[in-house]
Image (cartoon, rainbow, N blue to C red; front, side):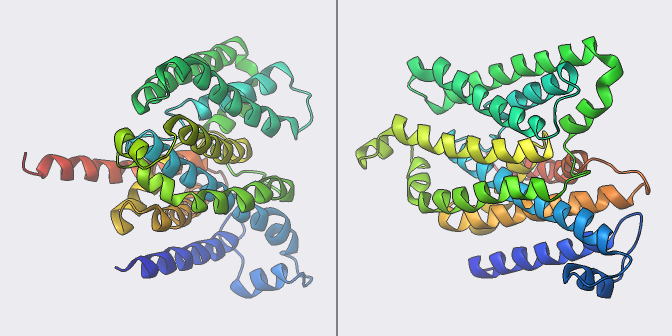
Length: 326
């Protein structure tokens, strides 16, 4: 499959899944009613489609873009195929901040939760920079220190859960990652960030390509390793942080979407970045669709569904790696 065809297929699949997501749910809606509701024509499904499902679909797409591209940057900069926002503690930092708001400030306005999560993600990044500064921000030090930071934040979250067992439902829903109750305000909070940051990341594809060659080659080509690694990580944190703040601690998209894209178009980031973004949106939409129809009228959080979808893929990768001759 050519690279252009792969992008077209991923884009068309995203549109198909978006339409299916608008139709499916506890109340099935016909294609005609979906279309008329989007066009603001009065019908009995207008509120369900335009005010409930459409913003939910858009949030899934935007967050899928952000998480997947954040994962691409991290895997390239850290040079670890298993890197994701979890590896450097971003998701865990956001989770601790969000849990603190849920448990300690239960009467705080709704908009305060995503703000706190975003701050928590950047706090984790700041701690990572402080601790890794003396180690020149090498890929190994970033990964190891990030894992340690994530473990500390995770312990803090678990402590809050143990100390506030009666208020656990909202926290667990956020930590699992969910699109439940997402409205237009979530779309408006995500859209400017994604619209600005994705082109910025793509414009840096050549630097990401060079990072794949190793630190010595990168230095010989005239790039400042520490400075460029910092700015690229900052882009990854911003994308992952704003996405996690909107949909909760969904960490699997940033891990698997870059893998799938890389297996199709290779490691050249001018192709890898847009395809990974589209695959991230596809996985978010697919997980949300399945989560809403498997046990109607209840929902399975999208973070759980994406993990279930992605786990077989990694089993396949493991078996494929073991089958190769030594």
